[in-house]
Image 1 (cartoon, one colour):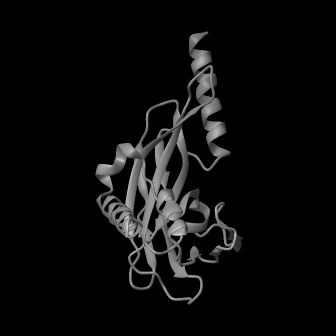
Image 2 (cartoon, one colour; image 1 turned 90 degrees about the vertical axis):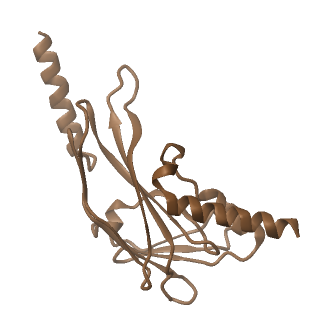
Length: 198
């Protein structure tokens, strides 16, 4: 009877995982690549920090499955505004399965695009063009374009820049694995504190 129960749980995990971009036991995510562009000038944004947060879900009866971060990576955009994350594979424990990859994109002076699931866009599966506005300022617009391109506006006012910097937060437990993000974030906070003190 116990073996049947375990077999039923395993079968459920395999069926559930195939319905949500997930894999079971072997965690695999493809290569992600994209481009970051200035929405006003159409010029590439070099040196933008792009962070990928890889997550899994774990069965936690009797409550809902629990999400957790298993890995984070960071990179900078090149002179053409392009970035790439190589494919990632690891083993995860039984009763866990792969979940969404969230991305964060930040360059001081530009609107931060904070934690969002863009894996279909950055893996080439989704070419939907979408425009959005941040909650605090509906006049600012960013856009997702075809071929994994995101177009960001400049932020001029102290308030917009401060709000954008607040969105640039990485998982606390992974700060030591994100030296570029930590340095850029601290530099922006120091700069904002300096100009606020004037």
